Image 1 (cartoon, rainbow, N blue to C red):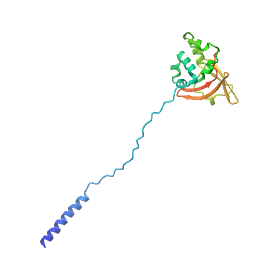
Image 2 (cartoon, rainbow, N blue to C red; image 1 turned 120 degrees about the horizontal axis):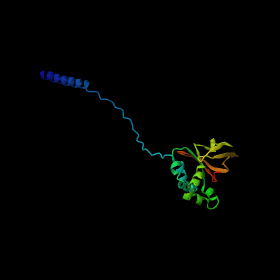
Image 3 (spheres, one colour; image 1 turned 60 degrees about the vertical axis):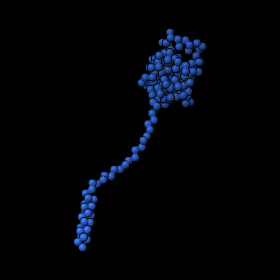
Image 4 (spheres, rainbow, N blue to C red; image 1 turned 90 degrees about the horizontal axis):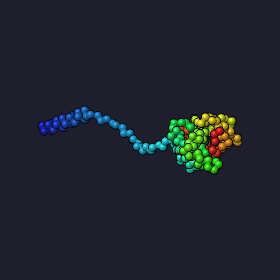
Amino acid sequence: MKNLRFLSLAVATVATAFLASCGNAPKEEVVEETAVEVVEEVPVEAPKTVVEIAVGSPDHTTLVAAVTAAGLVETLSGTGPFTIFAPTNAAFAALPAGTVDNLLKPESKDQLTSVLTYHVVAGNVMAADLSDGQVVKTLNGQDLKVSIKDGKVMINGATVTAADLAGSNGVIHVVDTVLLPK
């Protein structure tokens, strides 16, 4: 009986010690896991300048050559904004024979610059901003007259064949005729 009492006392002591240690056990913090989605960053291509748009157009190689010969690439790649009435290769081809070749000669740089800046207006002028009879001042200081008839926009008689080609520093309107200053 003495052994039974001793055994009961030992079990009670161990049980008390066990229960006491469980009550004093440090509490575990529950940390919520949040799923982190890994998204691969895709570089966003910056919008092209009006010069880069023209360079990328197979219909404007003559214009690009002229802008380069006149030394206007850096200027027209600048902050702007610029509105460019961009003649197509066909528009340049329609000029009298030898005109383009003469304009591209180094000694004709001033005349070429005058012709090209006659196609450029300061500001970002979208087609919807143009109105019939409107006069806009070009970078060479002369005016262009806008006419709109039956939904067709014309600049000094040149038809706008494509409008609102927006770039980071302006907008291009494609025209079917080379505009010649007075």
